Amino acid sequence: MKILITGGAGFIGSNTAKRFIDSGNDVIVFDNLSRKGSKSNLNWLKKNGNFSFIEGDLRDYELVKSIFSENENIDVVIHLAGQVAVTTSVENPREDFEINALGTLNVLEAIRENYNLEPLEKNNELLKDSPFLIFSSTNKVYGEMEDIEIVEKNNKYTYEKYPSGISENTLLDFHSPYGCSKGVADQYVIDYSRIYGIKSVVMRQSCIYGYRQFGIEDQGWVAWFTIASLLEKEITIYGDGKQVRDVLFIDDLVDCYVMAIENMEKINGKAYNIGGGSDNTLSLLELISLLEKFTKKKITPSYSNWRPGDQPVFVCNIERAYEEFGWKPKTSVEDGISKLQKWIYGNKDLFI
Ligand SMILES: NC(=O)c1ccc[n+]([C@@H]2O[C@H](COP(=O)([O-])OP(=O)(O)OC[C@H]3O[C@@H](n4cnc5c(N)ncnc54)[C@H](O)[C@@H]3O)[C@@H](O)[C@H]2O)c1
Image (tube, rainbow, N blue to C red):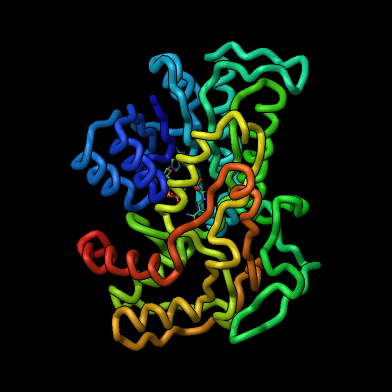
């Protein structure tokens, strides 16, 4: 297959690119290398296989369009490039919108124009001969879910009534500029499938963690805590540390993309929650304990006020993905964090 990966030098992108290069596909990585760590990820990819690299910005429509006109027969587009931090989106909402919302529209429009897609007459008309698009959305599209009851059990928060987590039937409720820009993109991708027949799927991802993740305090907390523990930088917990997220190891996410491609006709036009689910949850305090166990060193975090909009719990229900295309995570939290910790500690030079 010929596979275009936007944001292919990022954390998820470089892991995804590596998998598809290793399995013999023709991979094109597109990235503007704006994220700290992207250049290092790109160099790592270059050392480990053959692929094409296009340096450029998603906001440049003519450039995005030219990728499709100059590379015929792209089978799959995995669209990962994006502005990824909520805090940055609050500081610069226009830039966030332009990258996430307009940037995604640019990808959709580039496909529509290059493949001369006309509006479909009926929703069930045969799918057009366009690339299959996988879009990495976020669980932030469900907003704060203030009505859902939360209780504290075993020093961490949990849902009172949703043991399997939050499903895709939950009302969309975009909060924060990041939530809005990703949510807009999420809905455009679904609509372009409906209106123009672009084959696509939306993955509403929870916290992803793993190799080649350059987490910072504002984004990628699992990697950030691990990096900070290595560099002996202060870890600040905003709130009481009992906040819980479902977390997914990167290899499981890449499996999900592979399985989505295998099932593209079946899942076209749909959105799926993709995360660790209720079997793979982690509180901030639990992560600190795990890191202490692995490194045999005491970690003393400092505490600060809750960040606005920080949910006490977010755990997604991932049953639909299993029922409809057979995907579920394989890596336990303890194994995944152990792998991440070993990778970070074994690559100290990347972080100093
Ligand atoms: N990591 C997570 O936990 C998580 C969770 C939910 C959703 N997502 C989504 O998955 C995608 C990938 O996330 P990630 O964690 O790998 O982030 P990342 O920052 O490591 O990767 C994003 C890549 O996009 C590139 N990029 C940014 N702006 C660009 C632009 N204007 N043009 C071209 N390239 C640009 C960056 O240089 C970077 O290499 C993002 O869209 C993110 O919103 C990630």
